[in-house]
Image 1 (cartoon, helix red, strand yellow):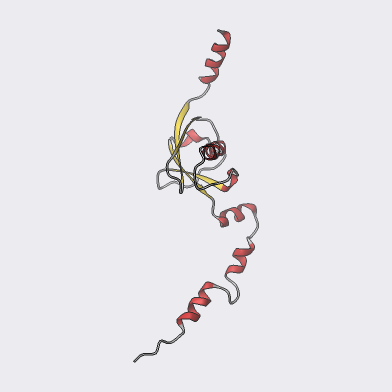
Image 2 (spheres, rainbow, N blue to C red):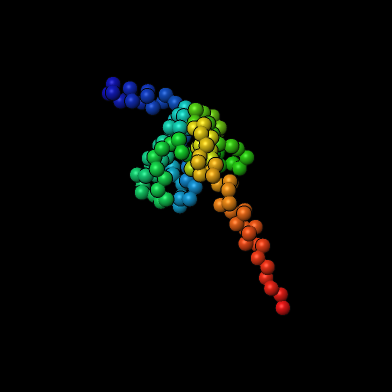
Length: 139
């Protein structure tokens, strides 16, 4: 009886909400219950674990630093990993993989492939200009 009362007191500690996270490129949302005071980073981690446990495709990986969580309304930006999930008053979210340029800027180093892409004769703009220079003989 005493153990039951302790569990009940722990459950009332914070408000719990049902959230729905749609993973970009996946068939449907992932739904689970979280505490309103839980950090966004912890929610991303839980979503990635649930996604992998369910065997969904495409395979995402498990590094939560590679992902960004957005509110489902169009006007908002990415949520900070240190915010609480209940702060925004939303229940529907979108989980996206970070772009390569965001990750390199976050780490403070420039990706070599991006640095080489625009320089030299191998750029795609130079190739298009060169291919458009061929004259088509007219009759």
